[in-house]
Structure formats: structure tokens, C-alpha cells
Length: 183
Image 1 (cartoon, rainbow, N blue to C red):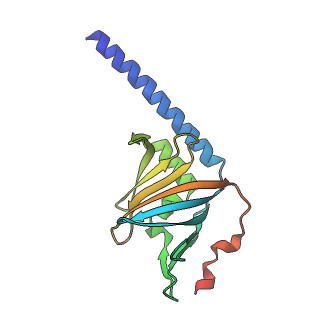
Image 2: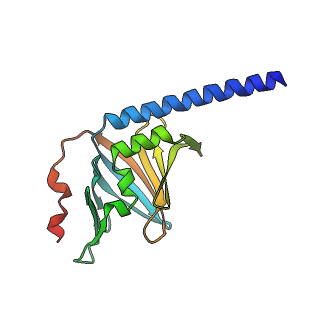
Image 3: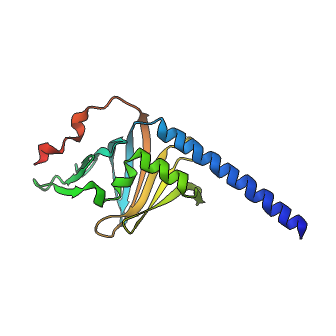
């Protein structure tokens, strides 16, 4: 029995140490990243869409979908989604969406520090609770950069977004996040 307890204790110690090292590497990556340019694949209720985004960690994002031409832009306070088949974009307060947590570097760092790093089906992630929504935030196993997220949208659809980072800390044109041109 003592041998079992010793083995269990050692296993727990090394497992928790490994996960704390992973958490620290994720935090270091986030601290050293101001922005990402990435390609994404998004699945909403089995419908797959792809596109490109630029994310700046002060709650700004600019995405263009490949086939539909849809755009998604946040200026840090507001979020718009505009489809090609409509002249009128949909406006949302960013704080009412899961992007509020995802696009804020300080929030993500805090969540990594306070939540347990989990592993399931070969994926590393944390779970963030925000406004009665759970957001799984995935990190790449090798480089430990942000790899995507899974959540529900405002229509209660399951949304899985996988990202493939192409560039980190690129010089960004601030006009990319100007939503006033859609008013």
C-alpha cells in the first residue's frame, strides 16, 4: 500500500510539474506576442468555412472568409459581421461575445494562470467560463501558441475554430480595424 501511495505521489508531482511548465511556456508566448496573422478553419453545425485573420491582442481582429467573402471586424469595443449578400452589417458589443476574452492577452494569461491545463484527444487546452458560455481555448502541442477555440455562438450553435499561425508580431495597419466605414 505504501508503494502504491509513493508511486501515485510521484506521478502526481511530475504530472503537475510538467503542466506548470506548459502553462509557463504558453504565458511566455502570449507575453511576447502582440499580434498573429493566421489562416482559420471554422466549423459551425457541420458547415465548414475557411479564411484569414489578423488578431491584435488589444481585442482587435479582422477576418475575411474565403468563399463567402464575409468579414468579421472588432475595433476593441464593437464587433461587426458583414455578409456579401447584405449591405447592412450586424453590430455587437464585443463584451457580449466570447471574443472579449479570446482577444485580450492579459485575460488569456490570467486564465492560463488560474485554470488547469487539460489534455484530451491529443489536444492541450484550458476552459474559460464567460457569461454562461464555456470556451475551450486550444494551444499547439509543440510551440504552445494559440491554436483555436470551441464555443457556442449567439444563436447557440456549436462553433469550432482552428487557427494556423503564419506570422507573429507583424507590423499592422490600424485602419484594418476601423468599423466606422460600415456605418
